[in-house]
Image (cartoon, rainbow, N blue to C red; front, side, top):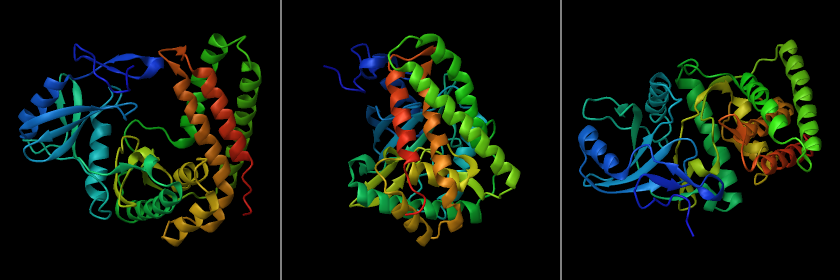
Length: 340
């Protein structure tokens, strides 16, 4: 029985679960050790593949200088996009100590490359994933941290939009337009598919109308560079307190209310109004009146999960189950009463 992240006997593949099975490693263990030693000047004693990453590939690297994480960026990430992330983290860590910024290589640059792969080296932070922390503790700490991050970014950092990145209201529409014909082609006749696709059609149409009204009202939404993927996997805890916020690969300029909605109102593990109160009390830079926007932004976030129902132009083996999960999330969000 394989565990996710197991390396194949030839050292060139890792086990990605029963659905995806063996996937190619972009760098093998020996190459990881080579690049860390030659480009970052750290003598490697051991390397271990980290299975937690979904889009990039990362390795835990032990050296005579300390412990690090080498991230190999996915190919669709441009050098300019990674440079933006690095610049943002370098500035943000001066205001929020739990932010982990990349380290410079021997040439003084934080971006290194190896066989056309973009590489970043980060200090390894010892602790446990937020997934292993009591939900009540995680909720309190996360709301406080998100408020601090948003306040620091809004007040001190002004980088503009990340190169080649779409805004929130463009992205979820683009995902739906892309996967809709693929799902209709590959899942037609599957049990329950017609009902699921009808539910999604209705949700998309409803949110389209709401967005048009929102823009027509010219309601200003405070925006800044946000994390973009603030979930328990990317929050490292030590002694029931947040020690680090990691994986800023999705950082971008978006409305702050968008991220608060995803974290506080889009997860079944969070009590939304308690989260909202802690966020505001901690200095989160949103007006209390933005509460009425949360549910629709959370619904848009649920629809973004549609991007994982296809791969290489085909519906994934678990696409139908994912559609059911998305429909369940939408139903749960719709039941949240904005008057607590």
